Length: 94
Image (tube, rainbow, N blue to C red; front, side, top):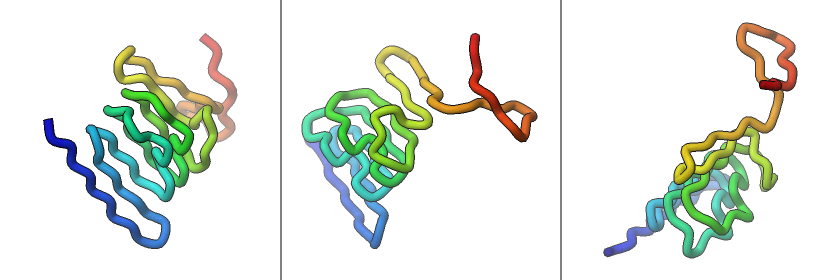
């Protein structure tokens, strides 16, 4: 199976497609060398990630992104306050 790598670098913008990884943002998925199926959006999103099938939506290198997920397990994580029709969201407890 062929692996395609595309890297477009502008001042603070990187797109990577390597082993089905997609990263948009400076240093997004920076540490992923062998993982596949990852998606990261944001400056340094998933920067320290090393696994596969992960979702990172974040604007820092935090290991707990604002929105994260695991595609293999069909899971999504929200690490923040959630508001639906609210201007002052609160932590969501279910």
